[in-house]
Image (cartoon, rainbow, N blue to C red; front, side, top):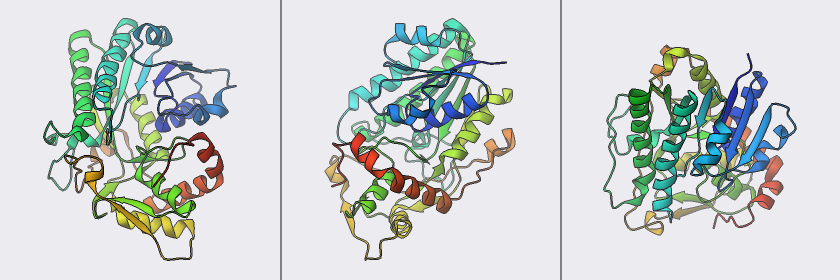
Length: 336
């Protein structure tokens, strides 16, 4: 039976790839995005699909969102603002917190399920070598604006459970970990792999925050979408928090070396080390974070299939083939 599904943040990385898979599965998909971060070009191949529609709208516009969600069985709530490195502290809090409440209100009124996109950043400064869904969420000083995104996501998670308790809204929370894949959006807030790839392809020094020894997890988009669909199809995920990632990590400096090799430049690598003080004298980053994905494995059989090297090589090839279009769509972006 065909279902109507709404995806907020539908023009972003996860939203656009999820839209394709849901359409291929025979569903009706409505993508909602204000295009402040996403790109409509991510959805260009879907615009003529009879079961796809796109609405340019901000999720804070509750009346418009209610109209979009009318008749939907599921709302994938992906719309959010990322870590504000340079600016946008208050806006991040407003969009991520108030926007989530508006989505949950819509779901309450129409009886829809909400699958909420959270992030492994909620684990913050947790010192454990491996973090599971039951691990403590340890954020830094409230004066450090870097934690505003994580704080707003934690609040969003609590809102989900609050609406589930009081209004019986079915909810599932996905804590995504380092998802990357083909996307036409590029900015200073893009994933580190995309910034490194574009820098290498344009013969510029690769930007490294701090000393580059910090490690990060990376999850290829195909694996992230596979897990998301499994969660959507599995009734027992109702009321659960699930980590989605690969369980592997790499230092940023080694990632730069890997990308340099895949780009195929037969010269010595050039690195541009950027001190955290360039963002703010109070900025900080976790040194390491490794995600336990065993719950996803046992609950619905998730097993990532794309290795870090294979995924990163595909990412480099995609950027090579689309570099001119990416530069045209993001003219103000500079890796300098």
